[in-house]
Length: 119
Picture 1 (cartoon, rainbow, N blue to C red):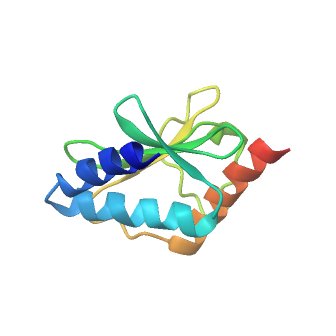
Picture 2: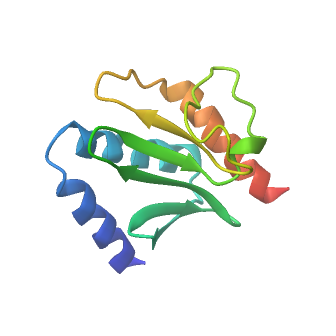
């Protein structure tokens, strides 16, 4: 558990531009939304689980992504999901540097993703 936290801390702190700050904020929002969520290190990225896979966060050259493993089942009234729309199961949000984060709407999606695993 501590080794996983250290890997995630290192990855986030190693990204010195806006993407590192956004990854840190997303990580915090995920933990604020579900106090029981666990961090894992899979596929070289932080993965969050609660009774199964919930979401993963990752940085790319020009964007940051949060991927919901059961995203196709999520209700998204705020239209946050903007990527992976043709996938059978996954959906994601790609954040550019100018993207404004809607904390409340994102927390709703995270909570719903967790609840899908608890049903």
